[in-house]
Image 1 (tube, rainbow, N blue to C red):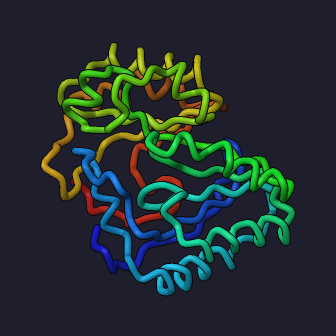
Image 2: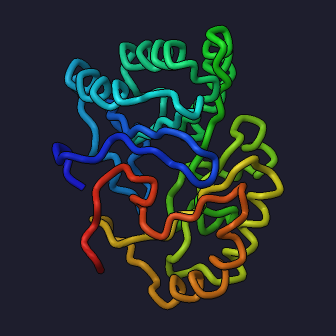
Length: 244
């Protein structure tokens, strides 16, 4: 992913949890250490340029489902204030009552205030976090997530939804199953992402990915609480990757 590359920034999800989704651009993820992630390259310190880009995507929102998901290369807290104000205005004008946003765990103490701000405008804010795995050693020493020893119980006090990452060397079918079941126990919704080749040094485990698709995917693909992204653009936003 290149910083200035044109990306698909608006899409409609019609199957599970129907909603509109927009990919916005902020100042960039403060963490930037996750071993698997290069999404932070989609960022800019030019707040006006970010707002203009974000407005193009937000102007496409129709409110047809009353639900909107915001994703960006980092946390919702890293969007400029003009974009945040526009999100609230769009939700109010389009009668959107439920908003889904993302954040790193480092922002967890700021979530209650943000939820209150949206609630005052009649908007129910659901927060999502990229946990990737509940194996703390693998999460912190291999994936470098920066969540410390936070437990699923602690994390779910602030976040209603979580993302898991599968298909990396060091994981197994059993560890993936454990992660999915743990996520279903503690969170309202789960998004399982199959790791794809990108610009980082981390590489996919193709054998494990094939086993996941054959053995685990059929078990959960129809579960209404789970989104499974076999490709990281399956939601219709981002950059379409070349085949590996």
